[in-house]
Image (cartoon, rainbow, N blue to C red; front, side, top):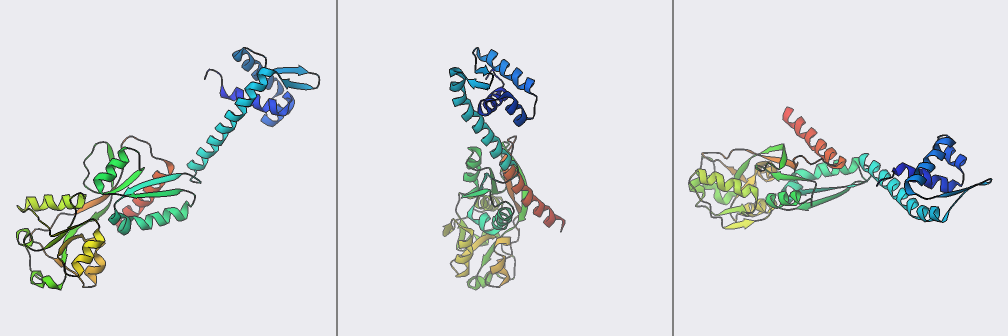
Length: 301
């Protein structure tokens, strides 16, 4: 647009006030400054917008036509600026988060609660998918940030580690013959196993570890939710590979016992990811800060 938007804003004020002096008072500028601005606008547009009379000014036909459009445009811009300011100050807007069912249930919920209590006007939307699917949602703009099982090796992503977790095998008393002594992955592979489906990052991590041990796992049951792993193991349907931190209740209560491996699985991490080089919304940036502050406190503790 060749003409300064400020000129249209001043023009609308003058047209509404019907007086240069009244417009000058409303805009807190001098009357000559208002008059000069209107001359500049008329010169830029190549037409006369106002008729000057002893009683003030009135719009010409060209001025009335321009005002019918400019008033709406200026109002829309003002509304947009107000909306941006409300978003900047977290008084409105939205935040779209991607995460698996497991991470929502066992990690994300308290942070959602804290964020919502502090910023109730921000609309939260959570989409549950596996880690690979969640990464794709982030890349196509369907979510702003995502909570995933690491590792995720992708140079287009910025990764922030928020929690260190441990994968362990657990079982009910039905498998007491495995209790109290180290068990090899080879021996474990011959037991009935209950594992997450192959689409999950957690399962891929387990399969890679088993491969390093020279073992290929063939589970009897594959599930899509971590909580179901615990329940299936609890009723004796098999030995489940679970995240120790997320199954602590059943382990600590004695309903399930942890099988000691001769070679324990290395720990891995949960991470918050966003697109590398893409500015975050104020809401997304604040949510990440809340999570990272807690992660830092836990690390120091």
